[in-house]
Image 1: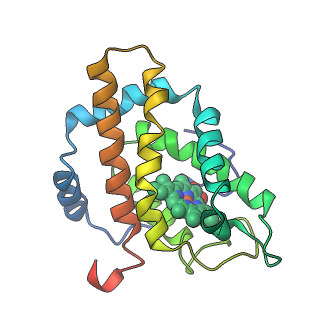
Image 2 (image 1 turned 30 degrees about the vertical axis):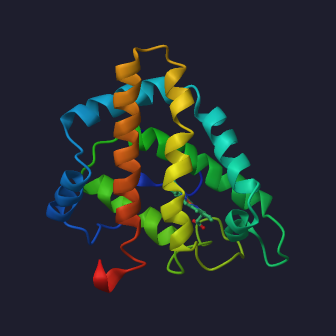
Length: 192
Ligand code: HEM
């Protein structure tokens, strides 16, 4: 999957410290199975030409909450527009990756990279910006709800049967919970 998104190098991420067995346990915890993989592929087809509209909704949400915008502010306390814009392109790719990529060792490696980019280990470096040193974990966890709730209308736009929309939505929900669990690892390394 060739891409020229600045700061996005899927194949370059270092191997994750999370083992395949630990990933399998998390998949079992959220009941993520082969049917969900199929449903996510379908969701990927439905969302592929709606990605910018989805991002508009999410960025409106973040932008309307000072505490969510805070990690995107510069040293002057103002939102850093370039930073927001650059992260947005990678966020769009994340929607595609969530639906289309196999959840293998490479995916696990990029999951760890995303996790680290929310923490002092890696935040700001990719875009060479001055900003806050980390994204508070409590905000990452609670954003699971809007990231999941707001995707549904876009899945419904497919006009597919209600049970197919439901299956795509549940698969999305499971994947986002699974990914946020993976992203919590560097925040809580010793107890993870
Ligand atoms: C980066 C997803 C929560 C702030 C990213 C990226 C993704 C992402 C996909 C880009 C990764 C890459 O560089 O390829 C998510 C999801 C969340 C979440 C799915 C919740 C379920 C949050 C919250 C905030 C936030 C709550 C702020 C309050 C940021 C920032 C970056 C970023 C500032 C850029 C980090 C850097 O400097 O590289 N996020 N995020 N994220 N996110 Fe999140």
